[in-house]
Length: 283
Image (tube, rainbow, N blue to C red; front, side, top):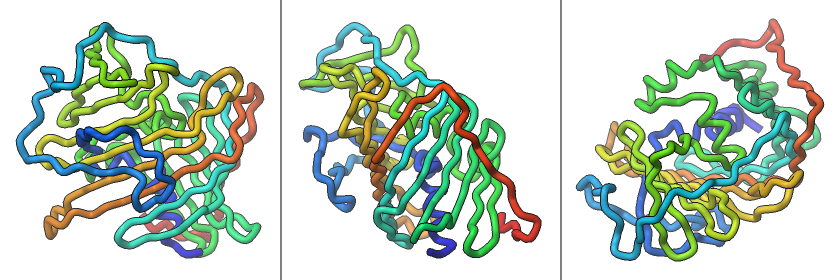
């Protein structure tokens, strides 16, 4: 395990950070488990999409009530795979604990030992690399400015549990396409399509595009199972296509989160986190 693992785990939390963006595809939702080919990305022209009119195969419909996860505490045991230009790791063991709207705690283990730990609150994000004895501290204002994207706790929480990242408004616009209701949203420079399964009324896919850059982001939720009377996605597949500001090359990032066990509990599972005095701050 190396320092790259800690940064890779940060990417799990910041996956929206890297300029989420939307692409439209005529293909149905992918079920390919391969992290390299999970999501087919369709290139778009640089012309801004007209989101005010339904496409040819879309029909405007009345708003629907989306089913979302509600809980006090969540405990999960998961495996994470991640591949980008500079990082590549497969089936890393991750333990997740959450207090709704308050705290996300992450522990990364390898060969029976904890190698990294992170705590995400409404104010800050801190990760420790226990192998190299150093740590990283971020706040949302810094990250939002760095990536030119409004990052907040609600967004990170939504990505992990499968709820809408952006709140559904009373006047939300929906269209119907095959077996999905599509909630269309515009958030600052982002155009977002939320694919809601007609049969379950759960978010199954999210596609987002940053109009100026045409950077793209796709998130697919799969393998829904019942957890305390809620449908919970036990697999999340994430794909990013982001153009480098430095050399204009398109960089791809793929990530898979597979939950082995998820529990919704009423008692506090604990969120132990303290940076030892001998650790060196890297950021």
